[in-house]
Amino acid sequence: MRVAVTIPYFDFFPELRAELAGAFPGAKFRSDRKRFEEDDLISYLKGFDAAVIGLDRFTDRVCAALPELKVVSLCSAGVDHIDPAILKKHGIKMWWAAGINKFSVSELAVCYMVLTLRRVHEFASLLQRGVWTGPVGFGADLRGKTVGIHGCGFIGKEVVKLLRPYGVKTLACDRVDIGEFCDEWDVEPVGEDELWARSDVLTIHLSINKSTMGMYTGAVLDKMKPGAVLINCARGNMVDEAALKTRLESGHIAGAAFDVFAVEPANGNELLKIPTFFASPHIGATTRDSWKAMLRSGMHGITHARDWEPGTYPFD
Image 1 (cartoon, helix red, strand yellow):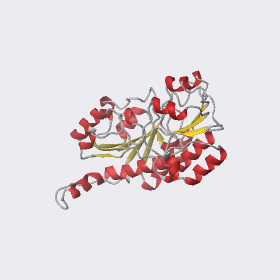
Image 2 (tube, one colour):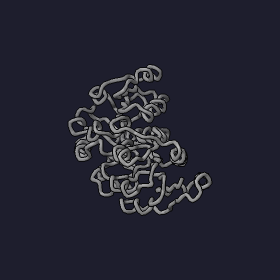
Image 3 (cartoon, one colour):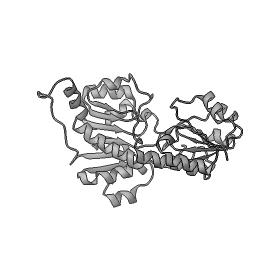
Image 4 (tube, one colour):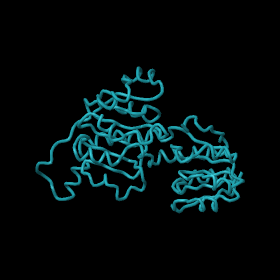
């Protein structure tokens, strides 16, 4: 099988690169970080049977131009960039492993809870401007707060486990039955309205699909408990960013920390001007541990890909 890798991260893991090259002689790797457009993908993958990919988009035009391609193996934790109907139309199998970066993302989410409540980003920016003392205000402890988890799947469950030592009250909302997990970990399952109304800290861990795209409208943000903080390490286009900016400015939402945005790169995003808003450039999985696991998953998928049906998890 002729294998081509579209992401440059194997350069950071020479042992995995050597393992893949040994299993598939002639495997093609790249080191540049240029974002591949349609023509780039077509040119790069021409003549190859399998592609190990990150967030590349396999449009109908791309797939039609690559008749030899039979496998697309994802290293990414999300699949919102893939259309299973297009893959099925062109007879391309896919590999994807859910929750592959759950430890890194869950740790980041808890980190951002503490950072936002303690106003670390805001205070650090004051220090950078030469303000050491003065009426800069107070932060808040995570301990004793009510933390709401919207989406209690692989990552949400890890957040629950990490929060246990903090002594918080944990609420969780999911569209599937999480009763057994909630009983085991002393979590209260609630509906969306109750989650929004009661959470001092609300962290989003939903998959992106038709039902969650744009879910956090201004009307939903208004349902959140006054003075709550919002954490999003899931996907950016679930939250109306303009509406969030307004509510941060009014203080209805006391602070927010986002790792993801509707448009990325998020350079120039208006939220970045808000003192109570902390941002990072989609770093949820950027640990060596996570990327090693994701690359190994992509390698595994070369020979374990299968057909995926449109309209079924995770494509819903």
